[in-house]
Image 1 (cartoon, rainbow, N blue to C red):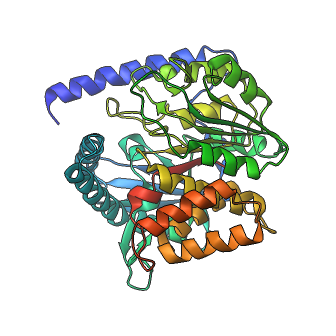
Image 2 (image 1 turned 45 degrees about the vertical axis):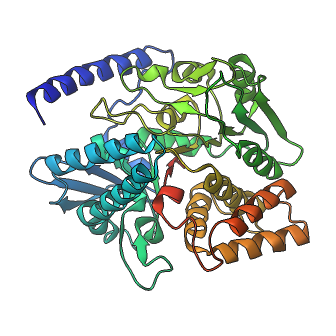
Amino acid sequence: MSDDDLIGLGAARRELDEAIGAIRGVPGFGSFLAPPGMDEVAVAARYQPLVYLAAAEAGGLAMVVRGEDVEHVPLPGLTGEALRGRVARHLELHGADKEDTPTATDSWRTGLDDVTRWLWTAVMEPVLGRLRADGAATLVAGGLLGLLPLHAAWTQDTSRPTGRRYALDESTLTYVPNARALTAARELAEGPVERLFTVADPAREAGSRRLDNAGIEALVAAAAFPGSTESAGGTAADVPTVSAALGRADVAHLACHGEADLMTPLESRLLLSGTDALRLRDLLALRLRLRLAVLSACETSVPGDELPDEVVSLPTGLLQAGAAGVIGALWEVPDQATAMLMTEFYRRWRHQERPVPPPTALREAQIWLRDTTNGEKLSAYRKALAEGAGWLPEQAADEFTLLLELRGAPDERLFAGPDSWAGFAYSGV
């Protein structure tokens, strides 16, 4: 990293500190991202391990906290230099992939495989070795490490359908910015879960990329909350309408574009109808009480590459604003794969005889999307359609079966690559 880069990072750090100070000036947010004391950390880690991860120039460290017990795990491969290089390459390839050319897409997929393989060796393998008896853990990823999909770290394993074993196969992994946010999220999660609000592909100005399957996602989400759904789309999804509806909702599914801006974190935003945008500043003022916010949009978890910390993103802000859990996208996620993933997520969370918690439902849905063949998916959709299963609206079934019939052989796995399923990360509880 050059001297100019270091000067730039220092200036960016000051910008970030000023932004955090501004957030703390909002009534009720005086402790926003303030370091919690050890007592608070111990309370947050009572139910499942809280794992702090940090890089350093001579090698990184993980701290696995279980109540008042703290176990230190050396991570010699997680040096500051190695992390900076990996993140820089990851962001470079991600940016190039937006050009939507076959070469750029192939390079992005290869680069994603490379960085997630490195994450296994440098970070997750040593940590998972201490977590296998737990089944679930919450990660606090410091600095640039928060830009990478730790749950998608992998190693070769010929016994698995894809020939790989991923970190999320070993444990349900969630993310939080700190212990205080985790404790607050647990308290919020105890409330009712009855009312859904959806936003589906608001009508933007000319030239904006459409989200072709956003309407299907809204139908799938609504099927999980029959008779208790409020929705907004097209030109109706403006800031006043969406703000008011969020205040009434227990769950929000927002299938719209998002932009994160760490240089001015309070301006991170969800793009609504016309030129409207719901900013993080606005969300903090709403004082929400959501069990879950699903940000089924492009890059809603990405803060950009200007700053050395990923502490103020849309998911982080929503946790502070009053959401117990947030599902956000780390990169530009494929539209069709996302619709299938969300369908399976809601099926497991809301439709099963024994439903599972949202973080588990997301993990299981990601594994299902990744490991099942095209033929297995087709069989599942046809069976559900024939039985009139409530979790699969007819329009969704038609879209999914047509896609699978046209793309790939029945024994292939169309969405096996991490670019298709690993883009979503779960923050909170």
